[in-house]
Length: 230
Image (tube, rainbow, N blue to C red; front, side, top):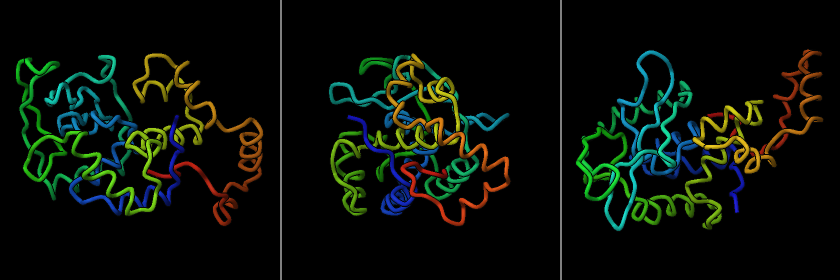
């Protein structure tokens, strides 16, 4: 069962409860739509120097109790837009916690070792593992925020929140599918069809914008299930 996308208030409150060392993981999940293992595997080298995109080329994966580097799910690398807010937070994170070189086997526990400079490591400069991060970091922040501690509020909820924001902003299913790394846009549509704005919503917004009343909503905003901002 899919988790309900978090509101901006929930996301902000949760992010504040995350330890400084791991806070940028929330930004990469909700701001770029990355999966947990992909978040753990992000390197400064993945930021494109010529345009604001993030190259998603690896994940940190737990296989038979051993951590490895592996391609993203399905073996598909991809590019995702890198918002200025996320880029700034990565820079701030790196100033406080300089990225660390980590060597892990590639693709299998017996694969050739590959060295990658990672943004996120633990206090011992070791790569993050879901088996330790989820109970030791994520769940502590969940409980401290008062969000229900259940499967719907695992780290994957950040991707759902990302999808909610993009769809609410009018992004296409095809583009969202690409950013999320789905093999089939049809799967994305089936997964997130409940988040698509209705035709009535689009009509009201279009006419309000044409009549110059788009700013009026800002004074008295309606509750939103989406992130609203990254």
